[in-house]
Length: 226
Ligand code: S3P
Image (cartoon, rainbow, N blue to C red; front, side):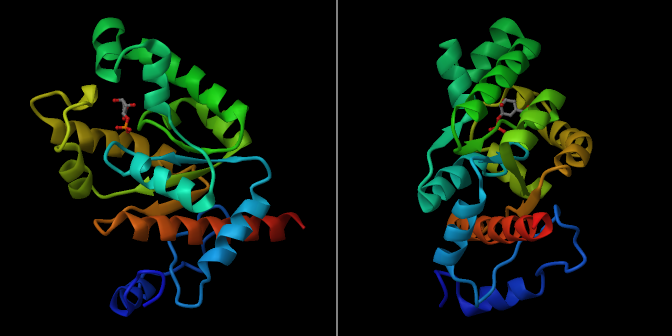
């Protein structure tokens, strides 16, 4: 056993390991037997340079759950952008959409994320549409390291079906909406610094993958800048 991951799982992961040809900013999920979790945490913390870690990805990718756990492991504070928007508005996200429309929500989303990123370094989970805004992408690039939690269609649908709090999916055909969002958003999400596959495995395994990949990215970044 290594850090809660069985040997069989590790061997399976080895088949999907790093694409050595990946350019610096496209590091893929990596878990190895030789990795030392504490070293990786130390490597991340020493190289973040006052930046936040910003989780992006579609509804159901696990941004809030993974973000909260990642924050615990890194001993950083955590914020969920949607929760902060709700606090600022005194209304839930569905209420904001219903009473004021999507554009109003998007304006608030941009302002709240900007504020959260200017305040202090933290782990920030963003709503699925946030990274589509050009100004928000620029702020994230300046003040953070972006991590795209990438999940496949079936997993996203399995997760979003459990809750009915997503206005964009309140339609007769949420599957078609999700396919459309994948098509529209994945090319833009692809601008993120890091991609981590969010699979249907215990959340802690995804957190470990995030830590591994972040550590690797930040070390490569430091080497490239040296
Ligand atoms: C949205 C995603 C939601 C929330 C809003 C719009 C989107 O957040 O911001 O319903 O455009 O994808 P989650 O991704 O956290 O569900």
